[in-house]
Amino acid sequence: MDWQPHITVATIVEDNGRFLMVEESKGGRNVLNQPAGHLDPNETLTEAAVRETLEETGWDVEPTGVVGIYLYTAPSNGVTYQRVCFIAKALKHHPDYQLDTGIVCAKWLTREQLLEQRANWRSELIMRCIDDYLAGIRFDLELIRPSL
Image (tube, rainbow, N blue to C red):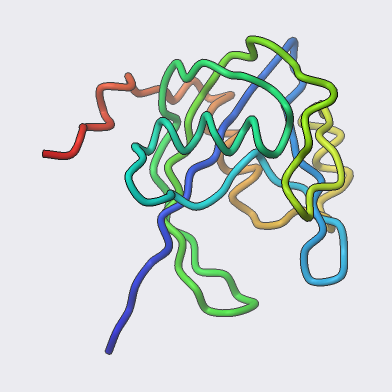
């Protein structure tokens, strides 16, 4: 059996109770997710989180911590994803930045607004990561060790 989980990153960016979210086209419908994506060759997990956030939202961010490391098996395709969820602060917005293909827009939403749009979540990891963040779960960036 050749089982290979997909390594992904996501970023929680919060500003006065609002979270930076991405509306993206997936499977013929628009869904909500944190800025997130796959780890590319020759980059660190932290670099991937910064890159994905910029590519999907037009925001430069500075990672400040880690909320957690999550395993999720998508019921739609059976693929298992390992998500490292970072915390970051927003630094600078580039409103004219060309967002990744499939990204409809970036938007700031409260937890309550996200709950109202539950049918549009890309996965249950969205709220799990936000709720862990709101519960004060934080790990230092030193949790992410450089490769040898």
